Length: 119
Picture: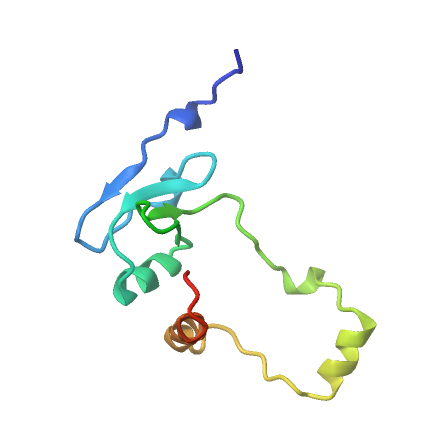
């Protein structure tokens, strides 16, 4: 019988209509944190800002995840290819951080809606 880790038995929280989440530190080892709630813009923005995201399929409950570790980029450790360096030197892109969170989330959703895609 495989050995069980204490985090295998961590609770999964059932969300209500209130827009709250348990701390992401309480997620199970696989990253599952909570089930339920809705996909309202307000809830999604609240979740994303805490490192929590939904992952589900039609006809299934909404499952909210916050795996550890998450992807973290350290700018001083990024290796840029020669071809990307050439593009960056042309100043084709304007790079910012945390400047338009709401607009980015809305634009991502709109692209999927225009293409008749789900989340």
